[in-house]
Every structure is written in C-alpha cells, then in structure tokens.
Image (cartoon, rainbow, N blue to C red; front, top):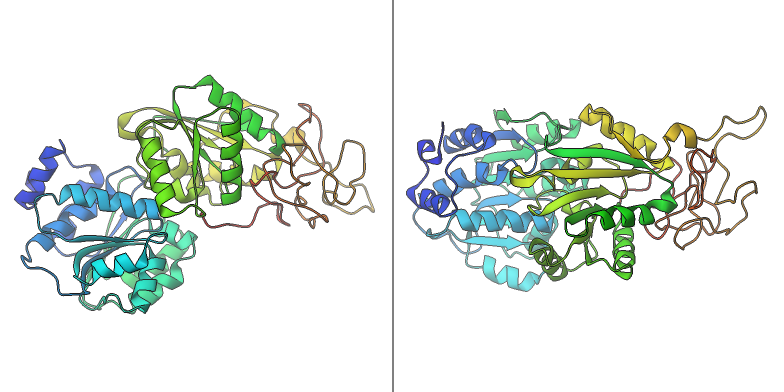
Length: 471
C-alpha cells in the first residue's frame, strides 16, 4: 500500500501530515503527486471530497520549499485560482496545515475583503497566492503584483469557473503568465469548453481520473419529491422537523430566494443561516464557522457552497430548487456523506423543473426514487385544442378562471409568477418561493399553468428555466 513517505515528499511536509494523522494518500493523490513532482502538466478529473487540494498542494509545496529563499517584492511563485471565496479559503487552510514548519509565504485574495490590505501583503512577495479571478485582476490592474515570475499555475474546479463566466478573466490572466511554467487543471466534469481551456493552458498533459464525471457518492441515499412550486417551503419544513438534531444544507437557485427562505425558516423557529453572493466575506465566514461548529442546524445557500465546503456534520441536502447545470447536482449532494459517513439528498421538483430533473438523471445514469407527490405526467398541461394557441396562459390563475393582469397565485406571498414554456411574463409578474400550480393544488389534479417561483426562488422565463444568476 502506498503511503506519503514513498512519494518522496519533503520531511517538513511528512511531519505536518503525521500531526494531522494523514498517512495514506487517496487515489487522486497517488496518481497525481508523482507526475507533479516530475514537473509535468496535469489534468485531474475527480469529484470534490477526493483530496484534490493535497494532490496539487503537497508536490507544489515540496518544490517551493526546495528553493530555500524568500520571493522578491510583488512577485508570485505559484498561483492557484478557484471560483468562490469559500473554496479559496478552504484551499488556503489546507495548504497552511500542510506547510506548518516551513517558511512558505501564503497569501489569499478574494472579493468582499479590503483590497488595500491585500495589496500590502502582496508587496512583500509571496510563494503561494490563492485567489478568485476577479479580485486578482483588480490587484493586477492596480499594479499590486506581477505574474512575470510565476512558475506554477493551478486551476481548481475549472468547470465551475467556466460555468460562472470566468473564461474571459482566465484568458486575460494567462497573457500575463510566463510561457515556461507548470500548469495543473483540476475539474469534476469535462464539458466541451474544458477542452479549449486545457489546450490553451496545458502542454502535453498527463490525465488522471479517479471516478467518472457525474457519479454520485455511494453512501448518499437519494430521492425526488414532486410538488407544486408554491408548496416547497412547507414541504421543506416537514422534512426538517423529522430530523431536528441533524444538520441540513438547503440549495436555492438565487441569492434573493436563499435569503427569503432563510428568514422564513427562522420565523418558523429553525436555527438557520444563509450564504450567497450578496453577503460580505465576513458574514459568509461567520455563518460557515457557526454551521461547522454545529451552532447552526440549517444552512440555506446558492451554488457558492456546492463545491469545496467540507463540513462532516451535514446529514441532509435538500435541493429546494433544481440546478440549471446538472453537474451542480452532483456537487451539491456531495456536501453530505463526507469522511466515510452516510447522508441523504432530497430533490424538490416542481412542474417547470422536469427538464432539470431529466438532465440530472441522464448525467448520473440513475433514476431518482420517488419519495412523494404526484408524478409530473399527472401535472402536465393538456394538448391545445385545434385552432387555439399552444402553451400555458399568461400569468397566474385560479382553477377554472382565466388569468387576470396582476392576479395573485398560490404560495407564500409575492405576485404571480411568469409564464411556463413558450409564454411571455404577465404584467406584474415577480419572483418568489411559490407560484406554479398554486399551493392548494390537489394530488392528481391536472394543472395547465407552469409559473415562476414565489418569494425569491426563481422567476419565470420563456423556456421554463430561470435565468442563471451568480452565486
């Protein structure tokens, strides 16, 4: 059996690993570390939670320790880019633990924190810079650092960086890096655009893969609960009340929806918090710290928490809104069943989300067991009569009545949602938790209207999918 000593790592790193009771590398570490030590470019495909940070971090620190002298002012020896503040901070925490006892300088730059203080730290020069692309560009434009001496580049969770629209930022950063460098690209999935990214950044790369993209953890019990959009909040409440002493992570599609859902749960007596892109860095860190310490039992989040958040106490993941990108489902539910534990993942599927559900099942190759509610076939809209306009009516409606402009629909407050597939939003349409068929729809009842969500989950759109919003 391979252990870290046989990989040839520096004694300082081995001592740090021993203090953390880490002796046996994971499969991605066993495959990746020897190639990185040899100086090869590498593409690593592995899910979150498989030990990717150590796979690139340990050999990187090994090579930097061997340099034996401090970096020059404003220079960066190794640059690690990640898509979210949370992932950046987690990478930095792990590298800090691995590098205990060495003289490695580690710097973190993310949005939501003082850019002036970050510039002051970079003025001394740094061995390892862990950053989000946006804040890094801000500091480069200010002249706070140079990448001319950067010999190592790591792109972590590269597929999510593409999904969040960072491709143009990455191209700008690439132009500032020396051509002679070692580049490591790690991703959980391999979309088509990733091939372009890999060909741009990597030279004759070694490819290592430890689990097929889209494979969900074996110890996660999964299921889907069909429900009108307007019933999701009360459905979530019933699930949470069944496990009051176990931590739950709830995913909302939008920042506004996550915040409103958190406030609703708090009003119902749950010890809940939220993290999303509208929160400051300090707020996000305090909330995650409270959740990690089990001082908070329910965390409502956007996909900002779908990757890189390692909280072993999470036993339940609820997909309150199904993700637009099916790969994100795998990352979301991967927040449970950590460190060998078991977990449960429940997807709430409204009529307008049937396309997202089918995409998830196609990606994972598994049909989700039905936990409750009526199947989508029961809730599907009927075929249009000859000579009549196809598609759902515009705006919300009561049963048996034609929709009126500005009419309210069922749910937990807010205006009627937009149209379903093929329709234009009605006047006065707004976003929120509910909408859809109306909170009072009976099981088995045929509903023609697919509306947007209410109280902030997602607004309606012409395609039946809400517009993507940043985390």
